[in-house]
Image 1: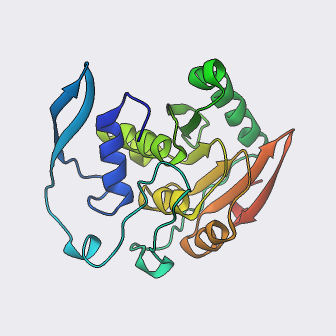
Image 2: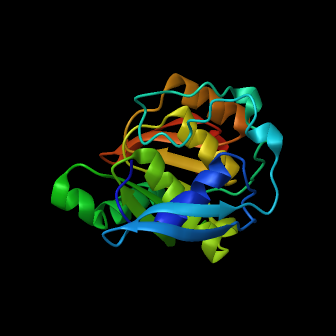
Length: 219
């Protein structure tokens, strides 16, 4: 269930978040079915498959929203803890949200969509996508940069709405060290961010924000 558009980016981002591919891998994705010029089905050929990533787990990082939570636990998120030593100015956080807000055209028209944006360390906007689902928007921006070969430039993942542990896990899989949200994080999201080495910011509005983990990256 997703807002039509950017389906190939959605698939690539989802595969990275699920651990099916690494962030520097590119699966072969082809459109196999359309309904009224809208992509309804795609075919994916993986370069290789880690069977541990698909056997014995209920994989719901792709859920459109947090109505249902998956059973994935912290110890199942594979990969080394992020050890990025770069720093960002506190003022840049609020400027990134202002930049995202003015580009949320779907939200401005409907009032019912979420957005995700990725910025570089220099605060340059690399990509922005909107979707009815928060997780979908995150998959789309990660997938977009993966396809372009620019995911290594990603430094800030900025999202509208709340932060769930699934979004923290997606951020970690994409190796993005800073994650910021307009609204609140769940307690499990905070635990994930602390353990995985991600700087988590929330309530980023009205010229202030709260830092929940790894504050050393914000000056």
